[in-house]
Structures are given as structure tokens and as C-alpha cells.
Length: 337
Image: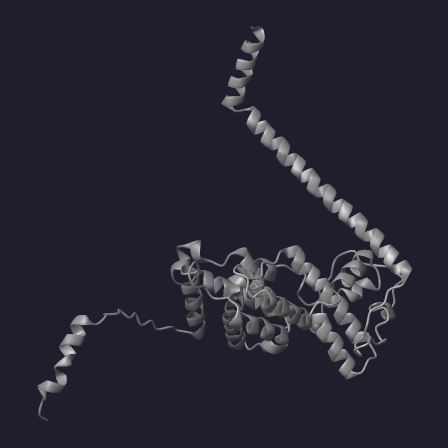
């Protein structure tokens, strides 16, 4: 075969001007090691482009399934305690993988661990799909699904506020249907605030209020006797937040005498557009107004107490400075004159 120099001439110029990239090829003994390495690389560059909590949960759940397969356990039908045992083993293996065995800097923190556990053990598949749908459009730092809220316990399956009386213990209890509705509401709110430079910043209190709203509305939809078309219309209005204020007032009162029909007062009546409407009696409005005023007064009193505490602290710091002592001495001398 004859060598044609003209065809090979551009090669030396390319080698001189091109970029040389060193590639480190790693061989993994198990598929779990590949998952652990992906998480480790993410932890090492988490200031730039880390994996989302959902991506980490998917990889660690795949590792748990691999461990369950080695032990002959069916992960799909395993109990929660069995899955938690698998989780502890996977977490132990990850913490001893690579540089993690000598450097604990890149280990998962408390927020990451609890977020992953909630996503793996206490989330419905439809909820995970909705979370990923939002992450595909909005970055995690600008979206609602951040570690501080995903690590909380109000939104997980079976969760409810403490010390509730019937029927509110069931109304505000999270289930698959309510959780799916909750993430639909979160996605709608995130899309509404997508144009903001800071994105959707949500606190734990606001997150819990949305959970209560989704549980309240989801319970009414589950127990309603409306047609499918009416349920779809009501669900759309719930997702758009049409009944947020009504929900806040009803959740604030938590009347034990409530029945299922009172979830949405006048829910079966229609307005001018043929949509389900909400109508409250004068007595209900008076109760809500009184409760709202009491809650607002308590919140204002708490804020005033905090402001006074900060003012006292500032005054103590100011009075202890050299400037105050010097002015105090100067004033004493001026008075003596």
C-alpha cells in the first residue's frame, strides 16, 4: 500500500494545535461502584454542577435494588424496614468508596440523606415524574425542589400535622392522590415565577401550607360525587390556586363538626360560567375573620418581640463601645463646668 504524504500532511499540524485530554479509564467490579463514583464526582464538583436530589435518589435506589438482588430479595415487594436495611448497607458502601474512606468531606450531608430517603421510600411514582418534569425546565437552584424542603416530612406519604381531631386527621393526611396534586400545584407556581431572576424561593412554612392546601382540596375531590368533567374543572382551579385563601381559613379553624360536604361549601352549585363555586355563610365568614385576626395578632406580637430583642442587643453593643464611654466622660466634664 503506497503512503500518500499529501493526505497525511494535515495530521502533524492538528497534533500541534489540538487539545490533549488525559482520559482515566476506570474498571468497576460491580454496577454499584459505578453509581457510587457518579455520586462522588458530583459531590466533588457540587459548587458548579451537582446532581439533583432526584438523580442521586435514582442512582442509590438502583444500588439498593442490586444489593437486594444479591440477597435474593424482591425489592418491589419488600417491606419498609427491609428497604431501610438495604439503604443503610448502600450508604455504608458509598461512604467507604474511593477517597471517601479517608476524606469525609464529600459524604452526603443530612439534607441530602433525608431527601433521598423521602424520594425513595415515601413518594409515589407519579410524584417523581412531576418533579423531574419541573427539573427539566427549571434548574434546581431556581425551582421549588431544593434540599431544605425535600428533606422535610410534611409532604411524604402518610404524613399529617400532629394532634388533629376527626375529621381533620384524615383531611390533612397525605396519600398518593394528594401528593400528585401537591406537585402539580408546585409546578404551576414554579412556572408562574419562572421569569423571576431569583426563581421560586419557598420556605418550609410556605411548603407546608401548600401541602395543607393540596390535602384539603384532594380530600374534597376524592369524596365528591361530581361528574368527571366537574372534577377536572375543580382540579384545574385547585392547581391554579383559586381556593388558597379559603383553605387557609378553614385549616386555621379546623372545626371538628365539619363533614365531607363542608370541604367545599356550595361545591355542587354552578356559577355563571358553569364552574363549581364556593359560597360561605355569614356565620362561617365571621368565624374565619375572628380566627384570622387572632392569628395575625399573635404573628404581629411575635414579630414585635423579636424586634425588641434585637433592639436591646444593639443598644447593649452600642453602650459598651469606647465612643459611648468617651462621650459619657465628655458630658460629665461639660456638666461640671
